[in-house]
Image 1 (cartoon, rainbow, N blue to C red):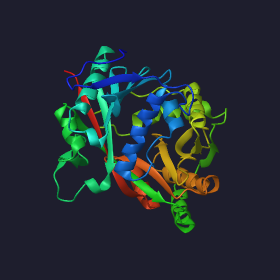
Image 2 (cartoon, one colour):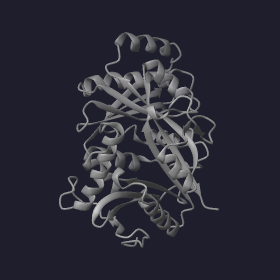
Image 3 (spheres, rainbow, N blue to C red):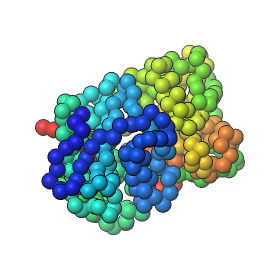
Image 4 (cartoon, rainbow, N blue to C red):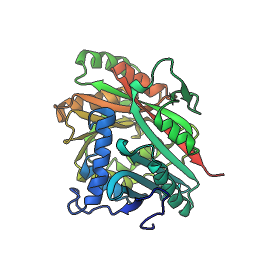
Length: 369
């Protein structure tokens, strides 16, 4: 990638940032400035860092891997960091797509800086023969004011505020709203009486299945079948009109994710349902935890494989993991999850467990004609 880009705004430069080798970003002031902008954004938007990557996690993620190339850019106005951009380029699947993200310090907005950053990202993506650009924007639930105008998602379920700055920016640059996800939070601990009641109901349908699990590393004897479930996760969840291809997971890809999480200070617990007759893994759910945010647990994937649905397995694996959470991370006070609005089954489980909406994600796409 080129080291800089020409701009119409005097004094503005947008340049690539080298991702440091050290997780503490020592000797990398540009990457620290990039991360500091992200921290400030989360504090301004949410009032906490529950949804923000730690510095170590950010370093490890933006290094990229054999499955996805990742690039970081820092925007400066007369030498002052005022914004950032990121570009992700899938390498194994979805090789005609690119992920773009733009962030501008609130004090410097409405000067065209965001447009300059986005234009540069799109130019770089086009240079890599990408013809579809994806972007996500997470915002607090209180922006969805009852009675206010909404832009409905193409999925037909959910929408984002018409008058929000992010909506205006996306529409101005030719992006369409494909899907909306609801961000929900569950207070911990969950009452054991509720878990027992939900578990008893689910067990009535779960004959022939066993619940097991692990922390941080999948057992060697299960990693191949677990990888097959991970592949299904990319094809069985609702993606509206985003048109993504399924991901091909194998044992090596599972191990890479596990090792990256651990190196970034992320602990995980996985609960799975195993079909007793065949040994197949029929369902799984993953929770992660960061010591930097000890009160928050993050719900990652949850999937029940086709052919094994209707047996209460989604509920059973979630209950198993919630119980492990109290043992592994006693300081945790909440679990955070995301679900596509058109996904009816998993949110029904979450609602029964006590999850409540706390935010929403707009998922945008721009396709070149």
